[in-house]
Length: 298
Image (cartoon, one colour):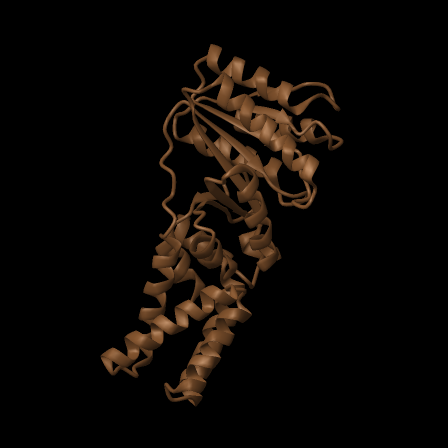
């Protein structure tokens, strides 16, 4: 099953909710002010942010009035086009090698599992991969990453529990350079986005990579739990201020009925979604596709 099939299945809950409400809206309302107010409510109910929902509805209204169109299919297609454009506002980074990807996020979003899946994705694309176990605080974090590294058949660099995370990053960078590894993936401890000292630690690891591996293409990816909806947006905003995010990985997309926050991430924060987790298996990770996401959303 390709991305479309997986994303369609993953977004089933969201699609059922949004599509049903849209059909009911077209049945009961002519395209006046009440129609557009309710259209905005439908978007908000799917966790599209307020600013993004208002922008989308205003554009739909303008286009529909100019075209003097009241056809349901036209409006639906127009809505899809506008939402797809929003997802494409932030360009997705094209991977260049050697590259380093540092994964950040709060506790419980699935960073370690995601790193295993991303490692597997690169291996399937014929790249050599090393993972760095820089989450030295959480009990069993390193052993969990070892399991995923073994599944993906990639090397792991680790220290003892409680070690300085930046020291792990330093050693991992040195190892990746010495072995001419294509991709270095760095796991980091989950942290509350309101804890300043933990966020400063991310900056320290960031500086180690920049200083020790300047020739590498360095990406910072935020891992977000799709089931948290708009709370994921607030997390992304703070992390972006701290480490200048290059992309987002969505986990648990198959467990949410509120996938609309993704449009706010791309439209308001200008951060692209790079990967989407669409299941629990190691191969259940796909490159994000804006067109197919929108098709799965409605």
